[in-house]
Length: 458
Image 1: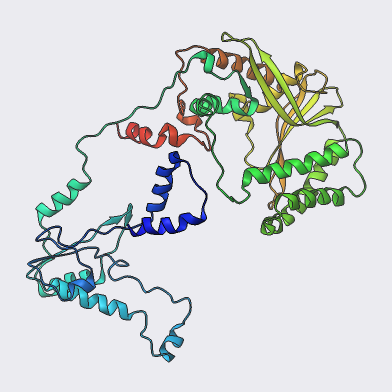
Image 2: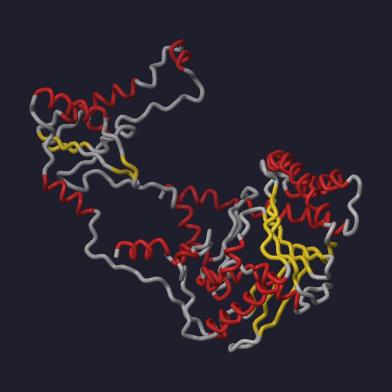
């Protein structure tokens, strides 16, 4: 009632709300209100705190929470007064509360019948018994009286609290939406996810579920990677031919511009990344000079698409290549900037990381805007970190090997599309445990932890 009265007073200063919003408003309002039961609800049972119990007597006393840090509570540091200051003011030290708690414990333990209880684990973390329990057990051992008795009946009751009546194991979800609802357009970066975690494709492209970013979140690895991509893209696009003499200063100026715009409200981000960007600039320009001896930039951040005939109808494969260059022999070099972990050649050869080979297939069909159709002669990841080793070039394939990888990746994609155009094919989570994705936004929806634990137990 008091909370409602306060809400009525505050309601004078807010706008009217629709009736349908009342349940949510009341739930939010009352969520922080504690309503304690009145005394005397049971004629023989009482729940007291240490202060209340000092002047009370009961036939049976149960002392709970006898864990170190809970009873006694650890002394909290005073944010305002140091120990010498408290002593000068004549205030008691923080440890005095431990003495008072010891007094309360002894008084409660002197009941005609006392049960001393503690939780062995708190939220799964092992606990330490209260110092008084340890001292009592040490005293009994010295007297030869044995340890404190532990009634079997009480232990069985405690175990029963966590013992379910039955175990109901769950199976992995196997959604099978109609073919008409299945995605007919995916990017090359989603194809690897489609193979390793089909459920993520189902949740994202069939259910249209997207993970929301936390409010006022810090700039994470993905955002920093996008900023680095933007810097390098601007530089290469402005200098497609010979590099200027002051290339290092120009690249850092672009980096200053991009990062200051993105981290205006978080200057600490810029201060942390400025030294890294200097290392990135030196490394990138060294590699760029070597690379341009045999290649010329054609397009950066270029979008492309390839239409594939499939049993369920046309399927569109899309891509956004970070960079496409023209090699000296007329073939194309397809480069992808990575600020995280770059796939290795064995992963690409197995088909689990088909991004670059599929981009090569799109380029061969002339699917990239402004890039004439041509075979790929080089597939490479430029991994950029700015750490002690500022970066590395991971060459996936060159020459005819790149053509072969493109053929195999495209053939594998055609088979994958045909498999999911079959209504009986389910979008299972983690169909191959050995290809477990590094992260997934939908693992909690698929309840992977629950059924995988059940399968491991079986």
